[in-house]
Image (cartoon, rainbow, N blue to C red; front, side):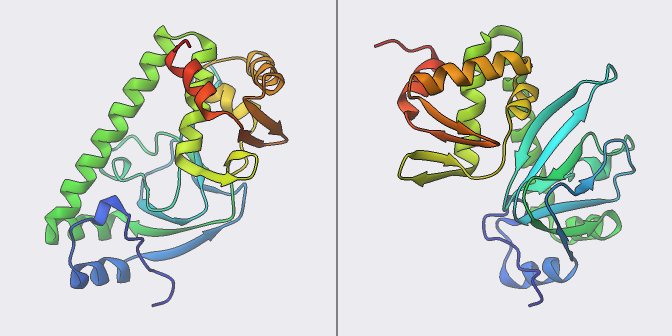
Length: 230
C-alpha cells in the first residue's frame, strides 16, 4: 500500500469485504495538510469527499451576518462532505486542519460509481448523514433552550469524548482548542466563555492554557451539563 489504508473504524465503508475495500482504497487519493490549512472552503463547488486518516479538522460556517459558527470537529475514521457532493449548493462550511493531518479523497465522479457497485457504501452514508443531522438538531435545541454555562459544559465534554486522552492531571482534549472556538460552538460571547472557564479553573474542574484544556473533575462537569445536584 502507498498510505491509502482505510481506517477499520471508517463508518462509510463498514460491511465491505477485503476485495471491495481494496477497490475503494485504490480509487482514492492521499492528501496531507499542515495545521491551519483549509481542506474545503464554504460555498465552493463540492467536487470531492474525504475520510480523515490522521489529525483533526474544524468545520465552521460563516453566517450571512458575518458570524462564524463551529459546527463540529472531525477526526480519524470520520467522513467529510459526502452529502455535499450530491447537492448543488457547494460545501456548507469550511474545514480547517487544527493539527497536521492526512485524508483520503474521492472525486465525485469516482464515488458515484463506487456507490452503485457497492450499495453498502450508500447505505452507510445515509446512516452517517442521519446521525450528524440528529446531532445538529440537538445542538440547535441546546442553543434555543439551555443556559450558557450548561452549553459550555456540554461542548467541553463533547470535545473530550471525541479526542480525550488520559493524563496524570485528568482528561486532556488532545488537539488545540481556543476559548474563541468554544464561544463559536456554543453561541456564547468570548467574554462569557473566558469568565466561565476561569471560574471552573478556580473550582478545580478544569486546567486551562493557551488552546489547551484538561478536565480535572469530569463528574463535576457532567453535573453542570446535566444540571444534576448532590
